[in-house]
Image (cartoon, rainbow, N blue to C red; front, side):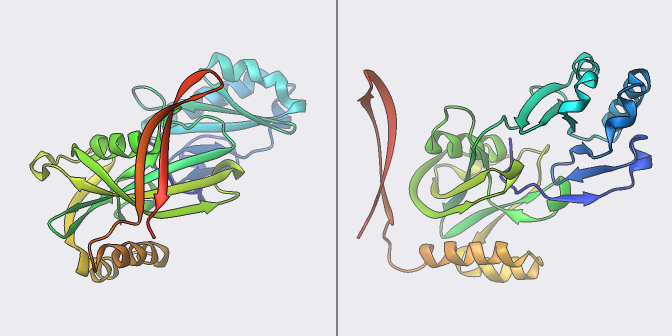
Length: 280
């Protein structure tokens, strides 16, 4: 599951991870090599030794991935990265960026894109909202909604139902769209779009959180959402988000969006459509 969080970097004690002199850790516990690699152009053997050492140390520290950029003048080093299991992730101008997934199983690193689309599930049951507590990265201990990035060719509705199922084992039904946010120059300098859906929980006895990603969960009464988040010392932008959610959940029972799913022909082929119509 790929959590929709803007790429936030912070300095780290690099000597404990590898022997590159400048590295950064991101909010997903991924390691980014920021060193000037020109010194290795004429010494690829040393570069290979350092990469192998870095991979081993990063795996022992449970880092999720390693990222490394090569300028067009440094492409002599590319075969070494490919030999060590790195993949070419994206090209921007004169820079070729490589990535290597370190954890077991299929890589969960997002692919190159012009936009990233994420979804969050406001799961409602008996006038309570489901909050989950993050287990990893700089958001460890933070409370929020289950959700993440859409997979390739996955619809918004398919994506949010999948994410909630993966993280909480709950089967839900999409009822409404409560919130939409667009932000430019976010992850990889691309546009980040986020949709929060109101979901009806069909059977809360199914709940079982994904212990790889989550620490805990709570069913919090809608009227007490903001008090709970303030007591847990959550950040202002999180509280503001849930203030918007609370305003839409409290009061008369009405929906903000009518959601229609259908197939229509587009350029000779049947295509899936999800149409969101505001209710006035």
